[in-house]
Image 1 (cartoon, rainbow, N blue to C red):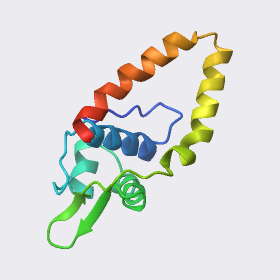
Image 2 (cartoon, helix red, strand yellow; image 1 turned 180 degrees about the horizontal axis):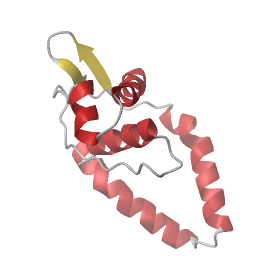
Image 3 (cartoon, rainbow, N blue to C red; image 1 turned 90 degrees about the vertical axis):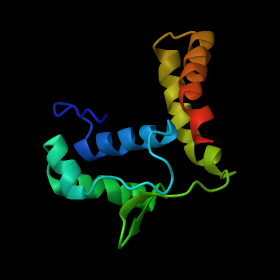
Image 4 (tube, one colour; image 1 turned 60 degrees about the vertical axis):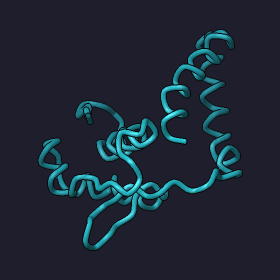
Length: 126
């Protein structure tokens, strides 16, 4: 279920993209399964179709979705693990950890939260 916060500072297309990524990681939509059409999802969420199109476009560019002329927008088959992915996200992780330290969160609490969140996704998506 997608729930957008129209008052958030995070752009709607980014919220939509992020929620779709989380749904994929939880296994809510299997590889090869179609997503709603741009028009249908926009109507369901009460947002502009261009917003959905932008989110879908980013997800296609990032390798999560693909377009099939007959079947529409589909969840792409998962590929083998990308050995460079951790290198790509290390700057984001570094900033997140720095902010966690600045907010006084103990390392053990941060690690426990990371493990809890990771476990919500990893078993289903792999």
